[in-house]
Image (cartoon, rainbow, N blue to C red; front, side, top):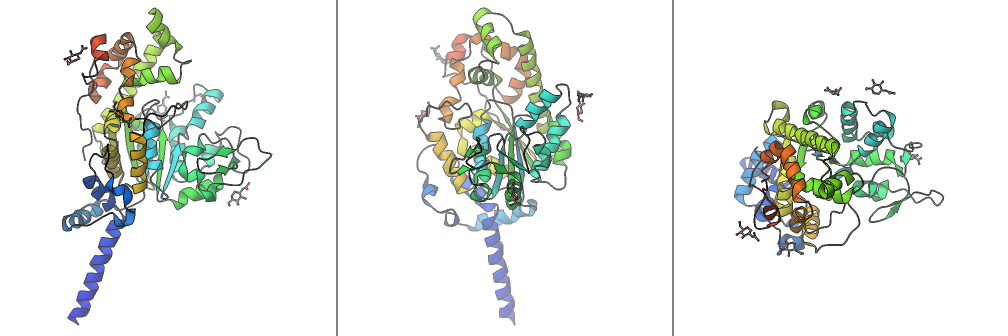
Length: 416
Ligand SMILES: *[C@@H]1O[C@H](CO)[C@@H](O)[C@H](O)[C@H]1NC(C)=O
Ligand SMILES: *[C@@H]1O[C@H](CO)[C@@H](O)[C@H](O)[C@H]1NC(C)=O
Ligand SMILES: *[C@@H]1O[C@H](CO)[C@@H](O)[C@H](O)[C@H]1NC(C)=O
Ligand SMILES: *[C@@H]1O[C@H](CO)[C@@H](O)[C@H](O)[C@H]1NC(C)=O
Ligand SMILES: *[C@@H]1O[C@H](CO)[C@@H](O)[C@H](O)[C@H]1NC(C)=O
């Protein structure tokens, strides 16, 4: 009699440990095992994901503590940022998670184009949020209204950067290439015909986690209804970068739009409109960050601020932190990708969205491309934002160009 009970109890314990191994313990363990893998010796590279984890007694205890907190395992990750902040790179951290992730790269691109063509003065805040909401629920109908040319029978060859989503390039979403259709997609691993959004929706539903990267959400508070939607388990990752570096990078990437800044640098003409816009953008970013860091109830455990500079310096550690925050396992596949793409020697690439770069070197490059005068303008209008994020001011060209002077204060924003 007694033995029977014992056997049942033992089976239960073994089952619990196995479930834990499947879920969130992997990310915690690997985080402890590989705290700052920015250089060589990737031991775990050789090991298969399933047998690379060795549980010790204390780890099992830790699991039982944390599993209480994370009840719903499905997660909806929204990466919020602005352009030229390294967000394609950070988006990849999640895109590369593996077969259980549905990732979308800038779906709101379609809205920005269409809304500004149709009605420049329209208040798009609510529309942006509604589209994000429906996409997190795997419903593409609302987005379809903004795709141009309009999809026919829910099929389109115009989805912005479909190939940036691994899930949209999987075999079951990849319809055969139609010869007489001019546009076709070249996914990285295969050629696909136009995208059937019904299949995309089905793929989305089959994945446990969903992630969207967007540079097109303004103020954080506009997302409150989305965050509070009971059908979802939203985690917001707010990615920021030194505004001086952002301006320098935008001047290179979008050189037409930034011609007025260049004139300022060359001829001293102050681009009044552009300076105003910069000031407005910096203020928006700061107010969102202040709201998030102030931890209002509706954002409790749902907001994480990350500096691009920290990601570039400690990609593996920061990725592990983001995964832990998101509450999903940091997969071996994602780690392999990060390692490969942070160490690889500089690749020449014309793609302005390129994610392949030597990240620790890349992060300081702007100091040698931005004229000191422009750095000063940014400091003048973005001062409070820079202070909040710990970006040091430069008072002379010598300081700007002297790489042994760090412009980054050590900060840890991630409370929780
Ligand atoms: C444009 O948007 C504004 C503000 O939402 C609205 O009042 C106006 O009627 C819209 N115009 C058109 C042509 O849709
Ligand atoms: C736009 O809409 C949001 C949310 O509906 C609202 O809070 C905001 O005040 C509106 N802005 C303008 C300029 O109408
Ligand atoms: C898109 O996929 C769905 C689901 O498999 C299918 O029923 C539909 O016929 C497809 N649409 C087109 C236009 O092929
Ligand atoms: C990446 O850049 C850093 C900083 O300049 C340099 O020390 C390192 O050797 C570079 N790594 C590769 C693989 O190019
Ligand atoms: C750069 O800064 C360091 C530390 O402040 C200083 O010792 C060094 O002289 C500076 N180098 C130049 C070229 O100004």
